[in-house]
Image (tube, rainbow, N blue to C red; front, side, top):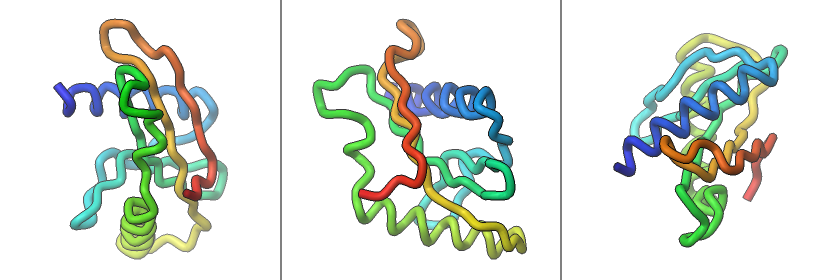
Length: 117
């Protein structure tokens, strides 16, 4: 169920960002031990997106699960992506926080640009 909720959230986040004018480059890109949920392009900038989805706020807000350790891991994975694809674009890490589920739909979605803990 948790995996299904996460995949649903990633699809909703991708749709949300595409509607904002972002271009989807990759989904679930792996750089052991980390996975980048979405790789998007915003103008000339590459955006590594961490998607956090919760069905409610009983365990806190989704973005609260992005720890300094997770950010460091994402930053390392982002640099590996840039190197692997031989890019020289500027890049950043964004977080998309979603509250909802497949049945009730998106109750709340927040896009945090340039996320820093």
